[in-house]
Amino acid sequence: MQPLILITCSANEEDFCLRRKYCERIVAAGGIPLIAPAADAGLTKFVSTADALLLSGGGDADAGLYGETKNAFCGVLDLARDAFELELIQLFWQNHKAILGICRGMQMINIAFGGTLYRDIIETGSCITHMQEKAKHETAHKVFLYGKLRKKAGEAIEVNSFHHQAVKDLGNGLICAAESEDGLCEAFYGKKGFLLGVQWHPEYLYDSLSEAVFKSFILAAKAK
Image (cartoon, rainbow, N blue to C red; front, side, top):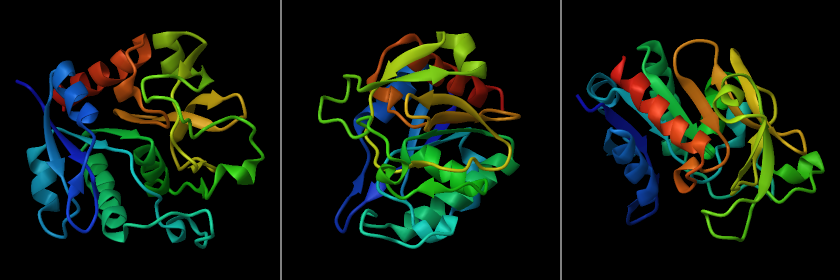
């Protein structure tokens, strides 16, 4: 059976928005994508129907969720999406279902587990380009891999990068699995089950680690 993967999306006044690559990579890895816009109703139905959760990229999370105040660096907020995703994370986790977070999705997982974010990477003094102007399939900087990710792809890989916020303090039970050269956490996993967050966009890359991320996610969804 092909597992059903719930994918969250962005929204504006007129449309729900999700880049096609998320769905294409889920299909290529053997899953069936189900796009889920923020909604007050139907959360438990989503959890009972879907086998796993993919939290996609998007805009900034509300700084108040991690004990900060919005400043000039923070972008336009989507409070409905924030609330929707936080509840989905808790429900899927409680039901022992696989969760993958990409870019904003990684940050939302961290918040859900009690972690914090840098409202803008300028707060860290980093000199690495984390918001590249190159095409999405091109890489911007190196990340050093640890633990489970190092076993899959070696000591380091080159990744793309499209974020101005980043994980500051890791949430409870999360283990750093990758760091950029400036010391920022670029990936983490949970101590149990399949819980993985990556700050870059593996859906646009076809290296061994990107392939492994989607394949292992689908395998975990099948094994729910």
